[in-house]
Image (cartoon, rainbow, N blue to C red; front, side, top):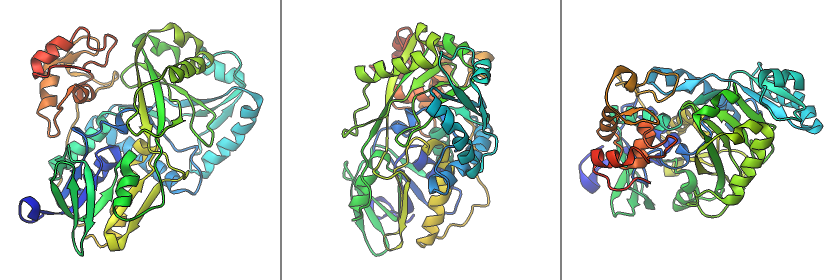
Length: 455
């Protein structure tokens, strides 16, 4: 970049601080480039990226030959390798896809064949008796299953944070509270104006704006897709429910959704969901009575004993669904612009591959990307139950449900992308995420942080 203030020009501005935008900023920071990650909210990873099913997908059920299928398969391999290196909690639990009627059972061989077309060779169709041997707590009526042994569960909170921390360590600027309202494309520089009146100037722009990706696309004078949010509600059950299942339990997917699953989480809980309701409000992340009742009915069929366990929390996330079944990835050379639009539930898995795709397309638009000779690595504090946690090495615990120490709270507040509210603190430490939902620790956390109210 050159100059200061409005005269400053970045090489690339990445709009959107979700898991995809953070992955793009991370990869760009590995090159001799000046990079700005522009996020509308007060923190990165605080939208769709924090409210997903936290599955690292093999891509066995993707539509063969599509860009999504290729990027999910590539992203799976990349993130599976990256996560242990930087301290993102990940577990190879495997998955069992369960058929609940004869029609679904008859579709399983085709799903296994589809997996092979996607390059995944280890899917195995099994009968109902074998399914019950693997998962004794399954509800009655299962007619068959398909094993997918390489599915993983992953920490969805630490993944975008790790990408952002690494981007910042290697020189990228993280600009939060910068909601984009206009884009003016000049002959060499695009000027992005934010709601607070700041002007961010960059030679190239990447659209990773998630739910608002279609709006940014239109600010550039383009059309082609419209995002209608798909709300997914989920229920998180107490850690005492964890012995009820050994692996993720998947439904037979439909053209509309992957369906309601039951999955362990790296934090030790069990998760039920999501629903899939197309809505018009891009801010409607509240749970609904209808949605929760629907999930409970599905859960009663899949794993009846789960409903005897305590619920820790409920939440909802919005996926960036469009009228197309495929990712909306494109680039416009004359605008020096790359769009990563319509990235739905597989975005977490595909994030690192989407970053590669973005850089390839930026180069096609004229960006010169020279690798740096030396990169600065980062290390997260793993949040998963199978990892060593800070409390095991000592320190005073402030959140007893999730065993979070005072030192972890302090570290989260001075990180390169610091926690600025209780939601950010929760995603960096697990504080407030336990069975008491802050009833015990909230007062002390308020005292430690100086923040007045926890959600």
